[in-house]
Length: 254
Image (cartoon, rainbow, N blue to C red; front, side):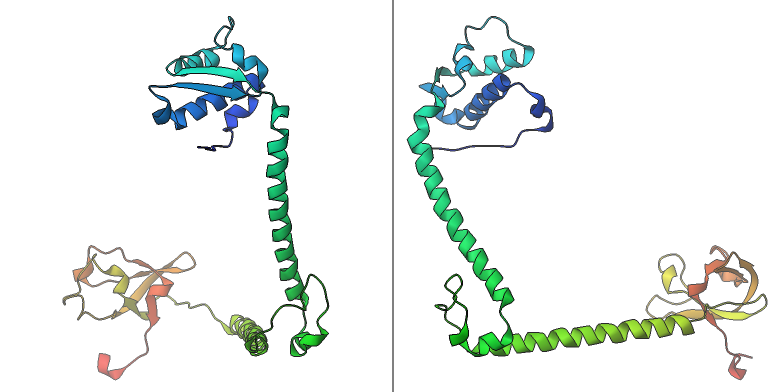
């Protein structure tokens, strides 16, 4: 059974010495496969030569002493295995990765070639350039319709974006800020007050606006102080301008 494990170095481990990093790799392997190693003898091979003397080394730092106590819980020996002994294995592994990389590169080239292809090229497959074997590819008949539909949709989205931008610029020029004067009458929007106060009726039946109410004073740039009825004594009488609506005189309100 061949197993493989790896992990990235933590920020504080970047400053570790090479000897400590090699020992940390051994500890990491023992922690991962400890359920297979308990109760039996195991041999650990490393290409770091000085690590094989870790059990007889006299001077150890605190980190090495802590890790060594963990390693001693296992019946294991650490042996030196030179890296040059894996030349054949490494060559074979690199060869396999090389073929895979080549295959991925060819696929990426095909994607870039498709992106550079023009609409008239799709209409006449025999005129396709012989780059990366594109001529041998099969062109399905619905591709042309799909490309034309996507192009038309892109043009439509672009035109709509231009119209929206133009409409926004026109609206910004024509927009006027809502302002009131002291003594004006306004309606107060009560929908945001849900759960704060109940206006004589249950929530589903109560009106969206109440009033008309008199403006007592302007507070700042966008807030106004209103003269509230007595039943709203527990509501703060300063409201943002977005909660107010202009009152238009009506004889039915007299």
